[in-house]
Image (tube, rainbow, N blue to C red; front, side):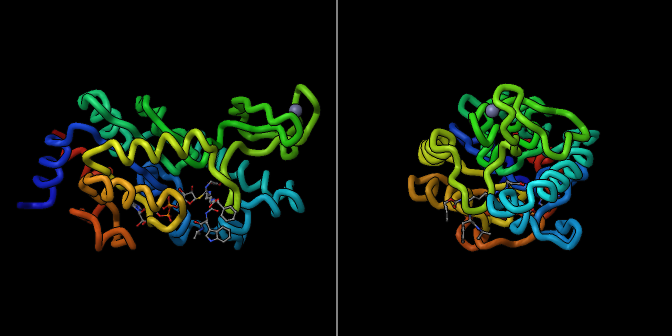
Length: 239
Ligand code: BV8
Ligand code: ZN
């Protein structure tokens, strides 16, 4: 059976769907991916800036990077892949969207049941009193401070070497175990623990469907890998 028809069959037959998305699902909206050539900023790699030590020693550079990303992302809109996932959620009795992305485009597209594994670029957290608040300023002041205690604010995202929020990770693990179809879209399946969710689902009897521009370490074990643009494949494979 042709890959798109097989994809449609899997999405139709599944009772409980869990989806994991990565930067590739926002690529067609204009958001640069991490490991693509445009993933560089002033010759830094994401791993060099998205880490607590960089923020401790160079908070100004880290905030400049996030500011650059906020200014780039603010005018962007959801693409057909985001919209197809919001439609699928409305149609399926059980659906959960787990995303590694921090751009907020899934919510903008109308998705509701979302787990943001790595946080959200439009939220900030006080490094002193831990208060989390929405902050959609574009541009944001380079060293923003807390209105409550004047502590230095940081992006409310998970950096390399930092643990994910326990309740969010637990919910993602539970979703992977409970689903009968786990769909992995637009991720290089390298970053842990997100990259282990598909195996967790397969270990509990779920089928694994991958939609990605290129092969990844997940591809050999997936039940089906469909290679191409998520914004083209998903809308054409809707139930
Ligand atoms: C943790 C938020 C426990 C910030 C991100 C050594 C020391 C310390 C840690 C580690 C270590 N070795 C391993 C680790 C663990 C580490 C890790 O996994 N490292 C990797 C690099 C090996 N993980 C962690 O540190 C995690 N925490 O493990 O805690 C711990 C504690 C202490 C010490 C050890 C362990 C925290 C990970 C979260 C990091 N934060 N982002 C920010 O965004 O600023 S990760 C970042 O990568 C983004 O969230 C991104 O989503 C994520 C994954 O990248 P992808 O989404 O997959 O993007 P990528 O560009 O890679 O791929 C895009 C794909 O899409 C490509 O395949 C492309 O072909 C495809 N594509 C492109 N266009 C399209 C498309 N597909 C379809 N359609 C298209 N149009
Ligand atoms: Zn504070």
